Amino acid sequence: MGNAAATPVLSARGLRKEYGKGEGLVRAVGGVDLDVGAGETVAIMGPSGCGKSTLLHLLGGLDRPSGGEVLLNGRRIDNTSENALARMRRTDVSYVFQSFHLMEELTAVENVELSALLAGRSPQAARRRAEELLDRLGLVGRSRFLPSALSGGQRQRVAVARALSNEPLVVLADEPTGNLDSAATLDVLHLFKDLHESGQTLVIVTHDARIAATADRMFSMRDGVLVDETRPTGAPGRLGALIGLED
Ligand SMILES: Nc1ncnc2c1ncn2[C@@H]1O[C@H](COP(=O)(O)OP(=O)(O)OP(=O)(O)O)[C@@H](O)[C@H]1O
Ligand SMILES: [Mg+2]
Image (cartoon, rainbow, N blue to C red; front, side, top):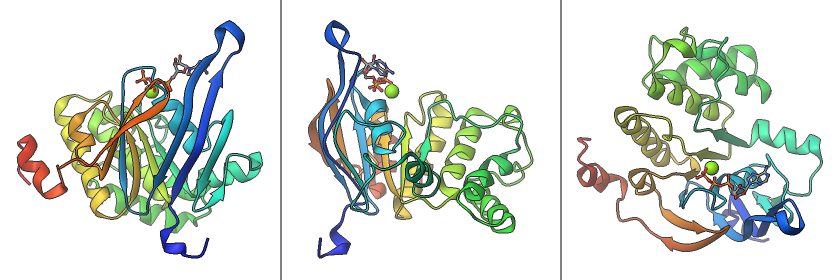
């Protein structure tokens, strides 16, 4: 308690998730302790099936743990009511998925403003913020396009704009470049770098070492646990040189 400034935005304590039982029991997450501070970017890397998505779902309140605790700004969310959890997902936590999950029948700006509307913003404020975010993410002139008329990188930028439109405490991204070609990946890489620099708290699951290199801390996950923590040397300023991008 006491020092509010030191309270992590997101914490996990002994977090576990098992699926099935008996012979079929799968220990997807097997005891994770993690603190993510305000403005910090944390990357999680690890082989397929090691539990990364499951962990992210638990951290975002999309799924209930089998054991342990999740705290958002110091408050337990793992044992809270469905209603409180739903509210928390609308207002405090945003998700970016590998496959974008945009609503195909809504335009870019409608997709983006939706999460601000769900978080309780007025239609005018939601639209203003959505247009601002799309501009900021380099989608000027695309706000009235349907997702089908956008490239993969543009769709993912719309998905990130949507994730930001409710001004969440933390953005959780699960393989945000998993479905993108290399040009679009660089696009999204720049975007996460900018978000990091703007002070957004971020947890990114990624197979892409370049994305992980933008993080303050990087964890390796194996068989449901975080086994290794490193501080990537690719601080934002050096990253461009490191991966051959001009800044
Ligand atoms: N709903 C479920 N029911 C049963 N088992 C599940 C379920 N969801 C995940 N699992 C199992 O939990 C383990 C971890 O899965 P998870 O999706 O978290 O892995 P991941 O690290 O995200 O993998 P990938 O890199 O392929 O996305 C896997 O063995 C998976 O089969
Ligand atoms: Mg996954």
